Length: 361
Image (cartoon, rainbow, N blue to C red; front, top):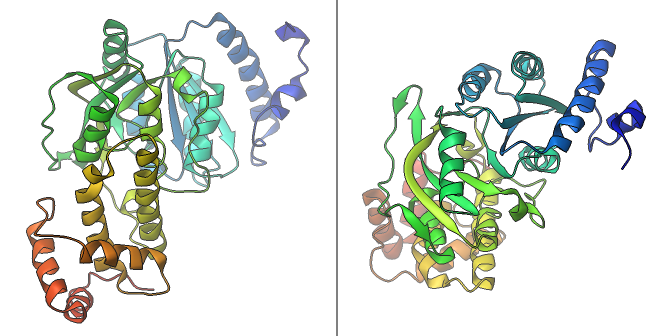
């Protein structure tokens, strides 16, 4: 094996998947060379139990709260990989500041390629036995790493699922009540859980790193968790669920999940269909997804309207036409709209437009 001292420094920089941002000074580049040397030496020791991957982009206002919560982690043998995805604000500098004051933090700076690419970048550089993810506008419990890791070790689990709390500022937002008891879950039970209440999210789970040997997040897409989480569940042989709340999810305008554009809504619907088809390939009963697809289709018809040139609009209308009875998953407003849709699709469209539910083209 080539010794670290014999590795050319320019090789280390060139081995990065994306070039270091041109905005860096010579001192900053030299600092990164030094970091890479120490990081490679650290990786060889293989003492890291959990790698936390944090993609960072245009969250200057929220980043310190996120990183403070990670700095407060009770677990010491972890690494926190901050992936500055070419953020144009002060995020890159903030990442460097935290890396300078806590040895568990490591800052990487790449060109902007999106959330999936940033996560994949971190996965490829992680040295921990387990991986966790954090979105850089959220925050976590001080026991985020330790509690999930202890559950994995105690129950020899490949994947640990835990609860999260949606937040509006510092106030708890309403969340769907989770009915499942803590304990081992079959792959199908775990899928039931993420579809019903636990969410497809990457960040409320701990994963054995080997689960990612053949899986990466789809680059150039949004709602990437929807197309990836179920695959990781089917890779895991032992899955444990704990009802502990370890993650705090910030609800805010401007985030991807709150993007109201037609493009984002179309992408979300597309990912839902892709997930449904992928689960069918794994043998999961597609009928168990009917209520979710019905709800998703109603939302699409409300927001996007009728458009025969839009394949997803046609798909959503076909789903609504095939609904028997009134789905329990619908809110009371959607139940009323479904009745109106059955009486007159044109009246349904008019109501959606008049009451401002329709997204503008």
